[in-house]
Length: 56
Image (cartoon, rainbow, N blue to C red):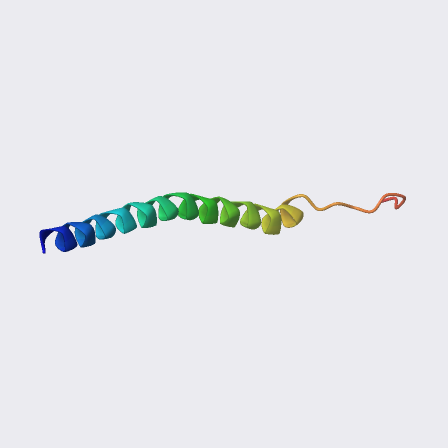
């Protein structure tokens, strides 16, 4: 009986560690992707590009 409880506790601990590790990698990746996307969406409005060949 002690072995089954120990195995179950070990499984819960390992699952928690690997879930936290996955979140530790996923959350910064999502944040950095959102930052890059927001910069890409805002950049054309900040720095408008005029077509070449036209004069003022």
